[in-house]
Length: 266
Figure 1 (tube, rainbow, N blue to C red):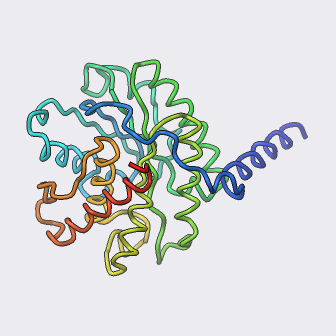
Figure 2 (tube, one colour):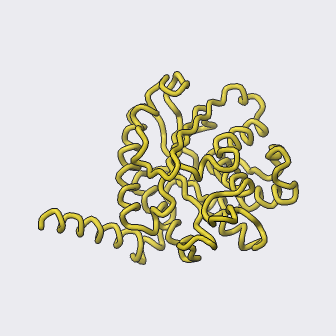
Figure 3 (tube, helix red, strand yellow):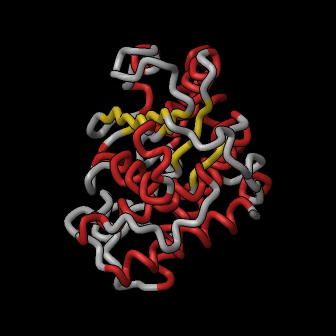
């Protein structure tokens, strides 16, 4: 009985703080600028949302290098992904121990991405919150900073596709980011804005309405770049090896910059 009451209390707190509270829906991010100046040692931790489309860490690193050739050789980007994983599936202690995955010095920045339904499913949400808190504390002990990756929402034909999920994603990650005092990367908002400007875009895989297409990963990289480096991706010469056409690339770069500027009020 006591265990059931404890679980119920956690659920009530979670729902009140994230889903239906008008205060939570009105939240704005408190961290509006990068917490690391030009990060070079960066780890991305998550699942298939990160490794689809040539892997987000590859696209992001190439975008940084294209804009700043002087630091290109010093960039150490790593990605740890597990298909279908929640954040708690990762051994954060091992991953962030210097030298374990080929980076001798501590990571300056660790980007955390969890279950795609964390913002709309209380069970997944609670797991992500607890895992993010533990990871943030551990990374801070090692002198690094954390950024939370706000994922894109599902679209048709995914069974959970619902336009309202965009707002739920936003509020969930802003609330958690404010609680941890870390930067939130508004990828989900960039996807929504891109579709608003051009509904014909193919940012998701057509067969599941969940995973990012190559263009979707490009948009995610541009949004992450703008968030972490506080520089516009508009005009960035990284061309995704011509697998995203020039017109679409420029449009996605602009969407990323506009979304980041509005989200942070920069």
